[in-house]
Amino acid sequence: MAKSREKTAAFHATAAVTLPVFGAMARVRVRNPEALPQEGPFILAPNHYSEIDPIVMGVAVWKSGRAPHFMAKASLWKIPVVKQILNGLKQIPVERSRTKTSGSAPMDAAAQIIEDQAGVIVYPEGTLTRDPEMWPMRGKNGAVRLAVDAGIPLIPAAHWGTHRLMPRYGRGIRPFPRKRIDVVFGAPIDLSGVTSSHSNKQVTAATAELMNSISALVGELRGLEPPKERWDPARAGQSETGRFSE
Image (cartoon, rainbow, N blue to C red):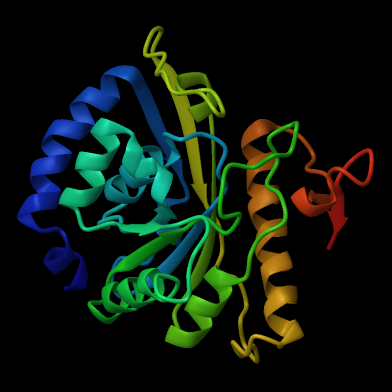
């Protein structure tokens, strides 16, 4: 089975160290783990509001039976412990400002992981949310395009509680008292009839649907109704809310 091949010795060794240490700082509770395919490739798209999010989502994916692979911003590689983990497990750094030369490298690496029948975790916002209330902001189209090109499931996900362990834009971890972090996986986004053309409005519409689904999952974990509009960083300085209607 694909899941047995992808859980390599490196993953098991990392899990043997990471899970007890992280578990001493936080209890990760996973809701609806059966929504994650138990074999075959997939794209998992979660919300993002703390630098420690990748470790949290990695723990959740591992506990759900799969090995986590990330497309995450390259600045995460500047955190010493995180850098060692990400490099050892062949994760995928994405530079915030990409050149023509480097821009295709993350997508090529992700495509190879997908070809190997593994799953890739993509943060569709591209960075930590700037929404003042930490709701997901407007997403980028990369997750949808990658899923459409590969013809694989695109699964929204959400978590809540990581900001108590490492605050947004914070660098220090607050391990005491032990935190509770909730993670939930949602139903796959319907991508039937969507093509990945750069000018295709369907991709943008599917990305909006993805972000709405992620926001709904975040609202489920927070016990709150998510805003009907996504925060748009490009417009934040031009309006009082900076929110973008989908």
